[in-house]
Image (cartoon, rainbow, N blue to C red; front, side, top):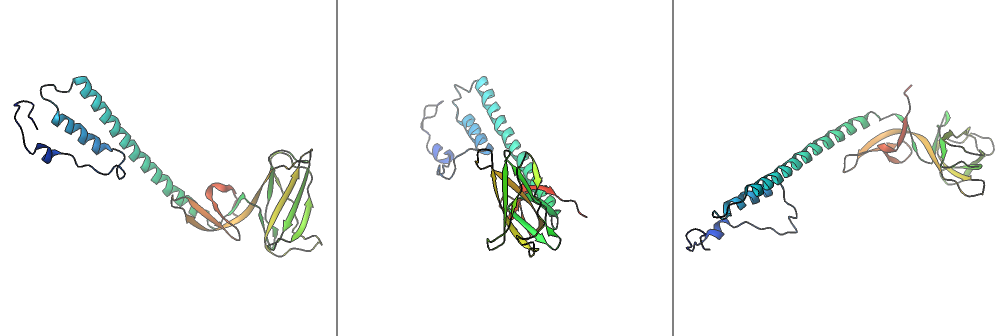
Length: 229
C-alpha cells in the first residue's frame, strides 16, 4: 500500500487492520455495534488531505443516532411483550375451575340437565332445525325452533330424547340447519359452556385452556366467564 502523505510503500497495514468477513448467509443485517465499527473505521482510514465534510459527518452521526434509537425502542418493546406475557400467564391461572362460555358445538349434560347453549345467526333465518347427537353420532332429539333473528339466543332443550326420556350425562353435539326465505343456508355460530380444568402454554407463551370433556381452546375464544356462586 502507498502512504497517502509520504508516497512510500507500507507493508502489512492491510493485514493487521483488515476487517474479518463472515458468510452473508450467517449474517444478513447490521446492528448498532456494526454501524459504529464502520463509522470509526471510516474515520480511521479517511484521506487526511481530504477529510470528511462537516455536513457529511453530521449526516452519518444522525444515522448512527437513528440506529441507536431503533435499538432502544426494540429493547423497550421486548420488555413490554415480556410483561404482557407474564400478566397473561397470571391472569389465565384465575380461570382454573371456572365455568366459561366459548364458541363450540358440544353441549354438556350433567345431573342438573343441559348446560347453557346459544345460537347466533349471521343473517336472520325463517326456519331453523337443531339436531342433537350422542357420542356415537346417533340422533337423540330434533328441535324445530323456527326463525332466528339477530343476536345470540338461548337454545331451549330440556335434556330429553325423542321419546321423552332424560338423556345420560355426557357431552352431546349440536348440528344446526338454518334457512332463509329462499331456502338458502344461513350461517349460524354456536356458543357452549364448559369448565376449565387445565392450562398449557404455546411456544409464544399464549395460554391454551383445557375444557372438561371438551376441546383445548385459546384464551381469546372465551365469550364470557360465568359468575361464581
